[in-house]
Length: 224
Image 1 (cartoon, rainbow, N blue to C red):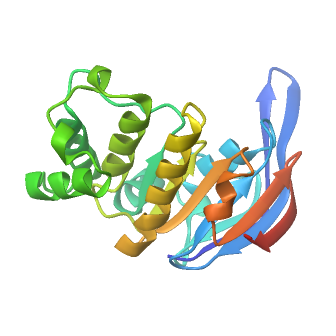
Image 2 (tube, helix red, strand yellow):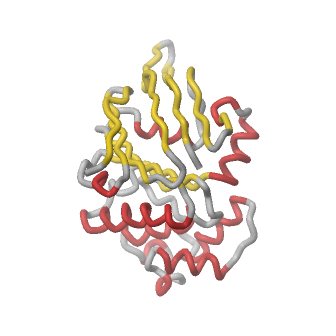
């Protein structure tokens, strides 16, 4: 699923004050690519992820995903498009505390409107290395394990686009690397993956890096 971001601007208003967040951002991502968006806190990374997911819309510019101009869809159509096509992994795991790891993944299927498939859910937990902890509740899992369950849940409906917003911010270094490599492996399951981070060490795993500072793209280059 290819992605094109074309001259995107976004501001947020608090009372009478309008604060610009994104200022003419443009870049593209090819189908099956694994791309890291690198920038310091406050650079606009999270806003960009929300726009790519169709959770919010730009003030100006276009976001086109697989030929669909997501930025111009009405709210209901954007929600339907997102449920069918996008998986999202957040900085905070957002697991349901009263559901087991397996049940959290099954819930991801239900929310996306696909059939609850226990075998597929177990396959996804195996993919993230947690098939032996399928019956554990979030409180019984480490932070790294919870984020891996969140990745399995995000893949529950086989999304074409997987977005991750600071998915490693609350993890130790070993788990950071494990989570980023799992995200990369999702491309082998057919997803285009874009993840945002402020950690320059993590983008070494990416095919390409989009650097963003103060709401502007300052560089697009292949990872070394």
